Image (cartoon, rainbow, N blue to C red; front, side, top):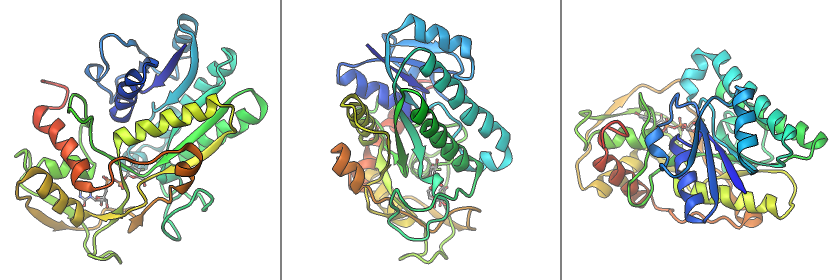
Length: 330
Ligand code: UFG
């Protein structure tokens, strides 16, 4: 049977497909290519260019394939954009989840692993954040992910669907051999932006504020390698296959790194100097986001393989150096 990967042409989704293939699973991908890249999915993987809000397209996918479970990444995921276009996030993410769950119920597909976010917590009252902490999103993106979790909760109470929701913190890195990686346009994430300096695409990295109440004044985040994340999804899938109950897990390394520490790690990973400019705070950035991920480690048996920042950034560097224009020109 096949695993349907919604959003399988995106950054995390494409690494998921890669991991599924390595584990001899059969992925089927649906992606509208709004932000994903067709080139990120191997030719031999069944691919549907369609939107998950299109129930007819889902009918086709679910009738043409024997789908055992769904792994769901298909969503808009930019905090800043969500503050400008809240209705886009509600429509694409929340309504998208509704249509997907309707199809799962209709076709008796009973397992879903969901890509959630640390943004569901909002401004944390304490770090590390545990799964039972209050969820008070501070932007429509985080709210949409929380609403999607709640939709799964209610559907699972009434229909024969079980879910695992994985709340990720900051995702970085690329496949070890660099054949796929992160390619957003425009780019807003820290690691690819830092690497644009040694790639000579920008003269310097601007640090968004160095007056935060942290050890060096810059924001602290918990960075997880994208392949470790994909591994967690496989463990979550197997957890559901073993008939375990629906649940929510944080995915982070449990260690926080500051923006300055990430830049230092990038200097070591690339062997290049990286020029820094100090800018203003970016609105909405919490000072610190660090996950307590003991629950995922204990219940799912997940253990991140990449724990030092230099090794995470090295894999991103391998990808960016070999694909300076992303997927556009190899
Ligand atoms: N940063 C800079 N300069 C840059 C880019 C980022 O200083 O040019 C800083 C940010 O201010 C922040 C840190 O680097 O302190 C990380 O920023 P990212 O944009 O890479 O990531 P965020 O922590 O803002 O967001 C991530 C995910 C979101 C998710 C959020 C959870 O990208 O999808 O975590 O809160 F919602």
